[in-house]
Amino acid sequence: MQQNVDDQAHWRVRMLPKDLGVALVVLVALGLALLLRGQVEGSMRQFQATDTPLRLAYPATWRNASSLQDVLLKVENPLTRATFKTTLTVESRELDPAAVPPLQELVNRRIEQRSSLIGYHFLASNPARVDEMDAMQIEYAYVVQPIDEPRRPSLPVVVHAREYVIGAGERSYYITLAAPADEFAGASATLDQIIGSARLRP
Image (cartoon, rainbow, N blue to C red; front, side, top):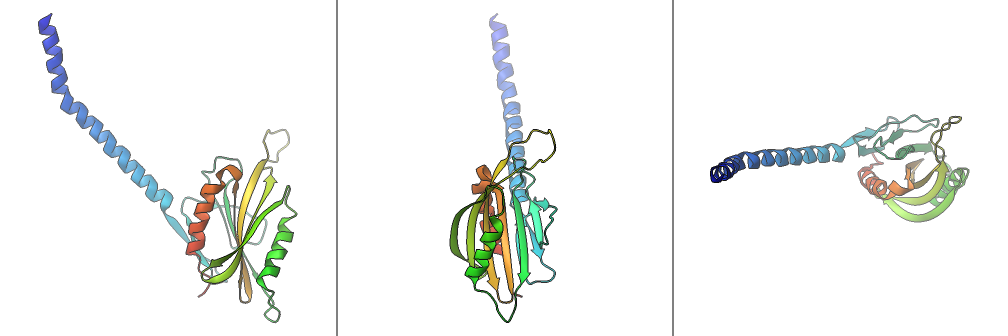
C-alpha cells in the first residue's frame, strides 16, 4: 500500500513540469489571440470621397450597407447585438455660393428633416469642431422596425443618433452615427475616433 502511495506521488512530481508547460502554452495562445483580436478590432479603414475633399477613417470590421439616399458613405457594424446594426452615414450637399446659409440654419433644416422619423425625440445640440471648422453636434432618438416582414416576430428598436452638421464654404457635410440605445455609449466613443480622423480640406 505504501508502495502505491509513493508511486503516485512520484508520478505527480514527474508530470508537474509537463502540466506547467501545457498551461503556459495555453496562456501564451490566449494572449496572442487577444492581441490579434485587438489589432483587428482596432484597425481602421480609410475613406476618401470622390467629388469632395472629405476623408476619414472608420473601423475596418464594418461593412458597406445599402442606402436609399444619395450618400457618400454608409457602413454598419455587423457585430451589433440588436437587429438594427450600428450605422455610420456620411452625406454632403452643395450650397449656393451666392447665399451660403449660416450653420444654425443648416442645423434647423436638419432637425426638421429628422423630425419625420417614427418616435423622433430631440435630445441635445452643442457646438463642435471638425478639422478646425465650426460644426454643430445634434443628438436625437427614434424608433425603427428592422424586420418588416408579415408575421415575423420582431420588436421595435429604440435608436440613439449623434450627428455632426458642418458648413464648409460652398458645401455642407452630415456625419451621422445611429446605434441601438443600449449600445450607444460604445458606438459614441467610436464616433469620436472617426470625427478625430476627418479631414475636410484638400
